Length: 362
Picture (cartoon, one colour):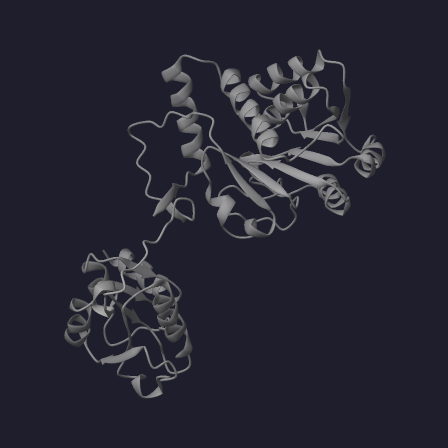
């Protein structure tokens, strides 16, 4: 199976600094590398063509600098580009300043977007085919002021393709939350996904996701524990005909409570669908009588205490815990016994509440 590493924005910045120091390059060199790689990704994936009128919206941070590098490449290649900067440009980073000087020297339309130019910007939105969103990126961790809310509303109401850099502007890189954010058709994610690309409101705003490798050198002392399963490279071997259910593992689903007996059953059905040879839904004795025996392939088991649960755990190859289990404390907490098995385990739903309590008590 393929996994993707997920970095926080702080870890990503640390990796950026390590790349600059290890390779002996400047911050602008790395920014130029990122913008160039994203421009190439746009070409490779056919996100724009030469008939398009393209708006580039660049904020005052490094995300805006990436957008300016992309704009510079587009201008050099003969695309019709209209550039808008936004935000307090006196606060721009050194790298952003270098990128702005570079693109300013080129023959293209440039404006600063504020209340006085907003009407012109809206007219340009109506004429444009594509907007490259470099307003905030991972630096956004604040409330939107009314003007930027109006800008986002105008972009979302326009009938054009939006390509966001790293994150759709308005989405928080830490938690993916964003009450008002740009709805992108495509998001070009630099090097690694961040929690904000995956959590909260993010899935509703990212559109198509393309991860762009810009050659970041990861520090040896950066120990990452966040990974997510990726469909890339996932293959399932074709099964031999002469096999039986014991060749494909036994999955134990631990969950359920009197009013939520369907949740573990759904998880057990998913385990069967994914290829497990044997699946058992294990319920506490306090709700075993309420079990749903509507799927004949799924076995059921009961446990009243830790010893009985351990008997079931020892017989299985993989464990799923938490669906419908309830958040209230039981006579015993199965979480530690489940984690101590050191077997492939999925903990979700109410199981996460019990896992948090178990970790806190350690």
